[in-house]
Length: 189
Image (cartoon, rainbow, N blue to C red):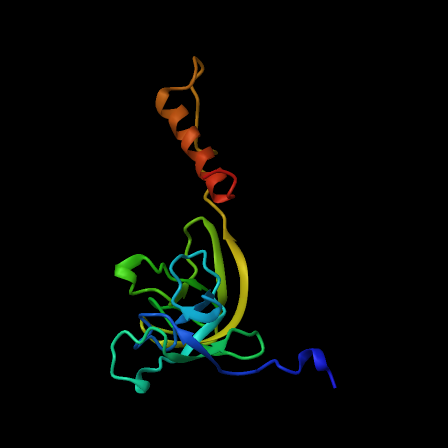
């Protein structure tokens, strides 16, 4: 018997839910502590690393619309089990999925996933889509949490300088390109 692992649990887990979880089944959740009580909530930033997917919002427990402090059920993100996560926009099977911007559209995208785009930066990959999907669908996802990087385009090669010196526009373009590269690599804010 492995006594050090005797109190671990697989599958859905009950948690205290934060406000705003009603009708958000299939969305990603982050775990935090509220006065020592493990609490789950929708992500608030694209840098949040979610650990769970909401399975049951607890709305059947009460008629209150807020439900803060009610028990909810959450499924852990594990590479061993695929999960359904609410999609933002459409995509195809095999694409890497990252978290949609939880601040966009007055928070309507919070907890949703989207196909990784071409905008340069570092993103939290949630997993890989196991099926084609459309906007709003519960897409089947194989969780694979990791940081992924989308490289910035080469904006330096096209710069040319005159024989008598660089123009103000060229120097400005070079400055902007170097700044963008440094920001993308998280070297500069």
